[in-house]
Length: 232
Image (cartoon, rainbow, N blue to C red; front, side):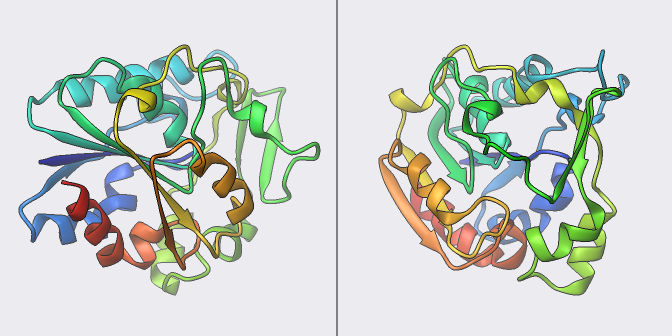
């Protein structure tokens, strides 16, 4: 069994965000990968008005999924749930979809479908340049308040501007209705409130609550490894 982890918006270096849980899984004989997302500037083309968007992110994750015949759990975090939902369609190796404080879309839905009337204060939008990003000064208290100061510093160093078009680009098809699906609700999340997560979780077959902030794979990696091991 292996895990493919799809990171959230406005960050780079999925391997780092996933590294603590990856280590815990490795001790249990489970391998994992965290593909780069082009819309976050993780390829040759920079994010921006003419930069890569959801289509390129889906293709990158789909390539990672297709790179092995090993039975696979797909873990989508936050925006990563949008990407994972379409990328996993029709991939025979995928056995289970896991959404962690994540958007869980139906076909035709996009991030903007779920947006609040007013933009949250912890995100910054620059339509002229075609990017958006997390406000660095609010990152620690919003997204990693239950992590160590070292993790908060290292996470802040990995914030990036992302192509703003991903907010409007809808998924065309989704894998989760045809697969076992688990939603992990992060009950202390300050970025995606638990109430919003619970609305998404109604689409999943199984729901697990964890008392964490937005990044439980950093604050409680053993807990996330336990959940995933139980699904493998």
